[in-house]
Length: 250
Length: 255
Image (cartoon, rainbow over the protein chains, first blue to last red):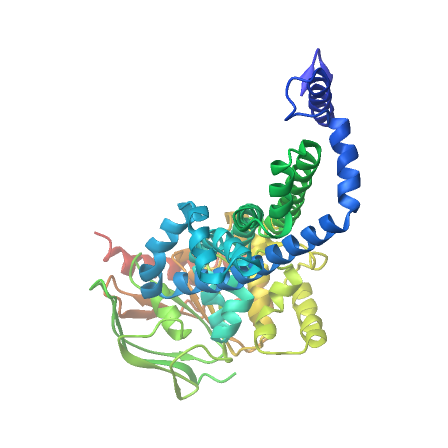
């Protein structure tokens, strides 16, 4: 960004909005928006409490488990659907329906099936994440260069080698893009799942803070969750850029 | 040098699922240690025939015999060089060249050593850790050629290897390839659509008819490569006669 011919670093934008927030907070426009400085101070105390550490632990565990299942099932099914035409046709429509469906609507059913607890949250993360991984893996495998497969066969590759040494690597840019989108959806899954279950993890804290009108703590938690989602997404985006380099002239 | 048949085609026919007759009753024996070119009007099925020899496509009728034995798929005695290079974009030149050996389970140190040797021979020393997209078309095909040489197959199958390479690079590459193959008793089967390329490179030219392709005529250019420079060869009477003879045959198939 340039203002009066001078380059303005990106961090200025952050600082600017922090200042605006602080000012609005101090003016006392609404008790929902306390000044940022007080949110940060509240955050410091909250982050150190045992309750937060435990909530974070449960949330991270649900996220990691749900994502792990989504990765295994998503990549597996995506490859199968791309390679076996009948499976692709059988499941293709459903994957497309679910990738755009509001999965949150299904969480009450999950609660009825799996109980009000961590399992439901893991299942929510899984459902939020898995379909976009399936879809992107499928596209990546379908786009894989036919002549690379032919080349591998001509040098005597067996079926397993064609998958591990050609197909999966060839589809890696698409698979990683799918995983990045899935991770962002997965964070939503954790929060929505826990909010609806509302007795565990970060969701329980959100519920607690908003019910008791602890807006400083509430906003501190929002910032932590936003930052987490951003860090995960940027981490995968970094991997993607490296893979793009190697896959350069596909 | 033995002239026994190393690859024999017996009654090869190929009909695609779409009903297109690509090849019909192709019979031919390729002598060992020679460079044979498959040449014909476009769409005559020469690439299909090469892929059938390579075991990448199954013929509808007939059989392919290599060293007297019927083959039904790719084999270690045949190595392929592809028109579009078919290099792994995520792998370095070194790993690409060693990839055939990697698939065969050659231990890493050994295959790296062999790959380095051939990278040097095709003139790419210093580019071992480059990626394919950092190389020019000609250099990429040198990688493809090196990869085919590492597996030490007796038969090298080349599918229009120079067609995606510009004219000047192509000439230099053709000469280098002749140099490389001359002192290795390789049998080369080479698909091209360039009459000059066929006459310049080949010991024998197998002319195919228009679709459905079948063997129409065999031409022996008899170009004396002895001590002649490439430019002298291109003015050689036998070379010019061969070019003319091929053209007279191919002309018939052009509508």
